[in-house]
Length: 193
Image (cartoon, rainbow, N blue to C red):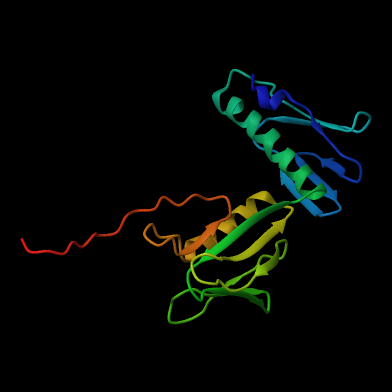
């Protein structure tokens, strides 16, 4: 029995959960999300106690065991997403690198001979706090936010993939909480041999 899967999911005020067959729809102040139930996991919406209960009728099957906790986590992420939302803070390091939003796209100037454009999904909001880097000490900062945790994480990963941080000077795009392992460059010594 999954310890995570057994825990009920509390539904906060202002969030509405609807169940039609195997489909679950969660709506709240930040938006609406919908998902089909995975496998044969049973989901019950208890409106009296404002909870969602996830149960596994066949705990002996290996795949059912694996999907029990996963299904509960996905539903919990939906409830949290439509009530509070998720956010990812990102940084750009490198002299003269910058980011701007224009026409539903993020445009990056990050050391290539051309600007790099990436389309912003409709459920994701972008807030640019510092658009241009100042040397290698002050990074450009921007925040991505949205109700869908999976969509937000995938979009942030696609942005990071444009120019991942390199280990020598630390230039590139990274998550704000990411630690980049730095390498020491070649040391040249002077003197005759």
